[in-house]
Image 1 (tube, rainbow, N blue to C red):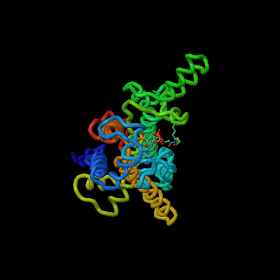
Image 2: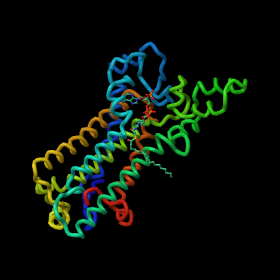
Image 3: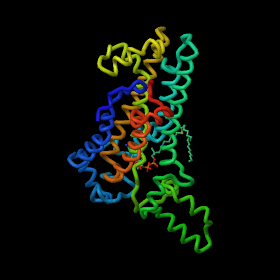
Image 4: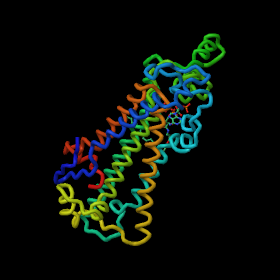
Length: 328
Ligand SMILES: CCCCCCCC/C=C\CCCCCCCC(=O)SCCNC(=O)CCNC(=O)[C@H](O)C(C)(C)COP(=O)(O)O
Ligand SMILES: Nc1ncnc2c1ncn2[C@@H]1O[C@H](COP(=O)(O)O)[C@@H](OP(=O)(O)O)[C@H]1O
């Protein structure tokens, strides 16, 4: 649904229908993996792979031979290692750059105390949205009172670390301690120990993190740069009229100095660069890795979080009071 309607306190500028881009990307990727001759060539590679993309996968990757033809089908591709694997660091850096360089958060203009108050509130709410998004990422992929939600889900659905069984055998024979065994109950520790994380429903951490990070950054960037867009394009319609009517009071002056403009532009480029590359890597995951279901569960968790943090507050005033709306 298009959510461009505005209320006096909420002025959404990003239609919620834009979120459909994510399921569309997964669909397109899955379709590509079915019809692409390259994907099929990989599929017919020497190593045995799960036959159906609907079946639980071994180590979560589909279509892959020992050395995949497509560069992006390799786990050690440079974008996976230096971008996705430290994706929250990039997300945090991009968000911080918005914070430092977008005038909506950091105006050098002298302001009345009510404007200062509004800016302070806007800043706190942006930090809160970051904290909420980070918490979802952290609990789902890093830690949830022990192993992360993804890992717990995997074990709960029958997954295990192959090496863990070996260890259990050794433990029973008194050759290993229980602490060693516990360390094999997360995907990361299992793989590090040379084990195979296999058998259960392995929600795609890549899909989850990439959707969450790109959704978060896109909403924040559109919000932070909205005053610039509105003044530059002279937007008309309800949202535009309302924005213009209150611009004089609420919109921070755009820093017209060359340095301010340069930094502002580059912070937005950084954010949209991270969003663009994030979308591309999501597309690659959709083509080369995981089963359908594992990708869709990752997507559902991330989209639910983005929806709750960015779309629901448009309709629910008490929620909007707390988390705010980007750019308002
Ligand atoms: C009710 C209790 C609430 C407790 C809530 C705790 C909330 C904690 C909140 C914040 C924790 C601190 C987080 C600070 C983040 C800022 C600094 C960083 O950016 S962290 C360092 C960078 N690390 C990453 O970016 C890792 C990203 N990678 C992944 O998440 C995974 O590799 C993957 C999910 C992308 C894939 O996983 P894989 O196992 O398949 O490779
Ligand atoms: N776009 C991508 N590019 C490269 N590797 C990817 C990828 N998407 C997923 N993978 C790899 O597929 C495995 C499962 O990912 P996830 O569960 O996070 O979606 C991970 O392997 P490793 O854990 O062996 O690195 C991950 O690195």
